[in-house]
Length: 534
Image (cartoon, rainbow, N blue to C red; front, side):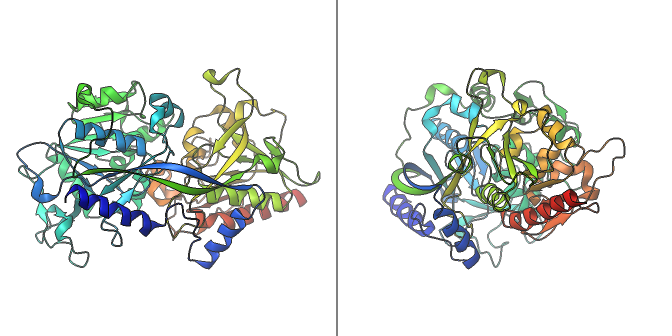
């Protein structure tokens, strides 16, 4: 494909996804929520400028397999900064690279990353603030499959037929294998776990690549892809790795040694706990991708293109609802609840929980992770921002976000007693893990509700690790995060997306997707009101 070809293709992509065009979703129920959100007095329409960077990778006919070939496993909603910096470095070093994934049938096989919804907001903004406002597009070059003989294989996108996935399959072997496979962080790894890697051909491809000596380079939750490869045990058992901050428990339940350093090199496994000043250059150095060749700007080649757009986002400002406070006063006789929400929460979950609690006139305290040492001296209130899900026609609050005022957990009045608590999903639970102040509130509260990734924030509390009984109630989460609960899988349930789970005590409520939030919050509120009346 020529430079003109990728330019023409990119224009069609932006149109096919209706990104930032204020177009409501087609589903009637989703459209109703969208119009409710956009019509609120707290919601403003904002114009943002976005730099779209398109990378098509190397097509099969262009590759010399006698030289290194690097792969990136991809889907939607990857971390734009992590993926973008890796691609920029590969281009600068003149390396061959390809994208592995499930190609969307309606747009020629392209995925795109999140926009500014960084996996570790503080560390990544500190690393390079210039990466804000950038969206990265990438085109699938190979689809994981198997040959007719059952050998793990890759199918070039140009010959891939979704009705006959073995057609054109090339078995992975010594002469046809990746040098490096990048597994980046954010929410994308769990999307991969729930779809492409759900005990499928792609699992066999990754396991075969491990056997053949492909180097695996993981950032943050990209490691979760490898942890989830084995249903009974992870292939990383007995290895050593760096894990996302405060998730040491995740490695221990998989039999993986926790590296004390932020970047760990264990044979062919290079793992970075997060993307930061401390890890980015050592990460590239470990993969022999030197810094001195890095250009200042994205090169214009037949594989790369840059296109700027102006897009519309609808932003709900919760501070207008709370009067500039971290709590919303309801009726004096109504229950008092804690709502745990943090940066990069899911907007449907955050808005639905807050909206329903406010309608019931509950007294709501919005709480985020404890204030760290570097934040001391700042204002006591913390403004957090949810993710923005761009261009997903199936997502009710597409092109929407929420900004909420919260109080850091370690500043919450210790005398406060809550009748229940709620946890939003998205990436926000990862900022709350191993937080003593949050654990104390959760352990002291009689009713719990957590949706999607939210149950991960309950790890180490009485709700998932009760002591001394060890009896855990039935629960669900977003399925792609199942490996976070390997030690309590006997209580873990897999349900259809949008369903909820209630444990036998009627005090623990969980949902597995954004569209389960309304049902979950309704049932939890009913339980809270019943508890108050008994």
